[in-house]
Image (cartoon, rainbow, N blue to C red; front, top):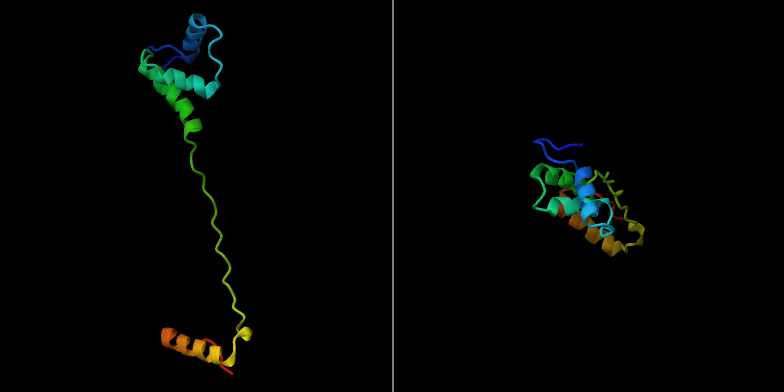
Length: 104
């Protein structure tokens, strides 16, 4: 696939590379794209095309993740002593302006 502006295709660059340096490149496709976009002797359009192809592997896009609200914690007040329950009751009235627990 030729690059706009009359540039060479990636296949042409690979063919030239393999012809001039046989059996040298042992990397994968991403390494090949990096080789092309880092080579200043290549056409800028070709380098941009190679960079676009490699970018999604070098810096993967973030994905949306659902965040679940943790259930409200319930406190077992039966473990409190009568004195602790009275203190808690007084604090709740002071902070909230109304009692939220029964004191027995």
